[in-house]
Amino acid sequence: MKTLYIILVLVLTLQSCRNNSKTEETAQSDLPCLSDSEVNALIEPELKPVNYNISLNGKIGYNPNNVVQYVSLVDGIITNTNVSLGDHVKKGQILASIKSIELNAMQSELSQLQSQLKVAKRELKSTESFYKSGISSEKDLISAQSELSQIQSQITNLKSNLNLFSAKPESGVFEIIAPVSGYIVGSQMAPGLQINAGSEPLFTLSNLDDVWINANIYPKDISYVSEGMPVSITGIAFAGKTFKGTISKISKVIDPEDNVMKAHIILKNEDFQLKPGLNVSINVEKTLDRSALYLPKSAVIFNDNQYFVMTALNSEKCQLQAQEVTILEQDKNGYYLASGINSDDKIIEKDALLWYNAYLNN
Image: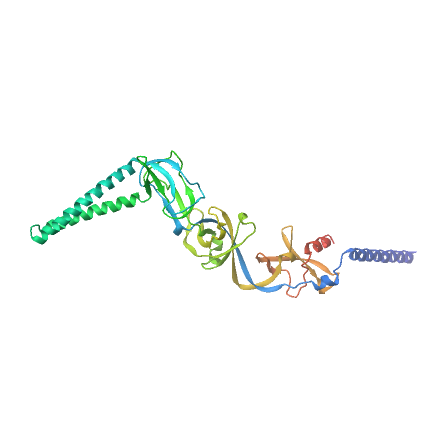
């Protein structure tokens, strides 16, 4: 009886093992396998020098070498404006009208000085004649020359101050003239505005042929960024277009307010797409003195704060496995791996996420 019991237990155990084996085979057979073309499309990781990808933020600004700001030299009231922010103006174009008692007084003073100049010229001519005849002394001649020179200097200064204004027939009203051609990129002008000599600029002109990109370099990236490095510039206002440039200058000190180092990138402003004030993203790549295995982004799956790749064991169609990997660095096209795979591993690139999901729960 005892022997019969042992035999029965062995039979049941063997039967159970056979059933489990069939279940595992059935589960394995339910998983998808690679086709011949998919096996041929498997890729191997590439050993490449590591590119450290740096993302900076920045803002488009004016080229300070191509900007003219007009600050009023006199007090007055703006009576009329002829341009608006963003308008293109030509040198000598009338921008606004201003009523100023000071300008009227300056113009009157100029007329008086011009009359005095005629008198001074006649006196100098007479003194020179008397000096040649021995009637006047050398001191008299020098005094006449000095007086003429002072009047001429005062006239030159007044004309310089009045150069940006043009008198209108109406008494005390003058016109503000554009000193150069360019775009109105800043304006405080408005009819009725009271202006004071030396106050904030009434308008700012820039030709916008080229602009400065002012970039912020954070402390962790300072050692990787240097002058002359190529950069790619993008922004939501550019409809997917990328602008190429180089870092022209990097400040030698840290900005105390933002705790960043400032860099400048000068770009030609073709078609005037680069508008001052727009925020931009700046991408810089630095090739490091080391190499690592590299895979394209399409071959790497991110799930639950981890990175995985799908490997085909021994290039077999049905022996697939999700392998966790560690990311060292990444660029816009792929990832440099610190660990997880070998250089001869066969990796699924096409539809990698679909294969990962298919094998996730098995």
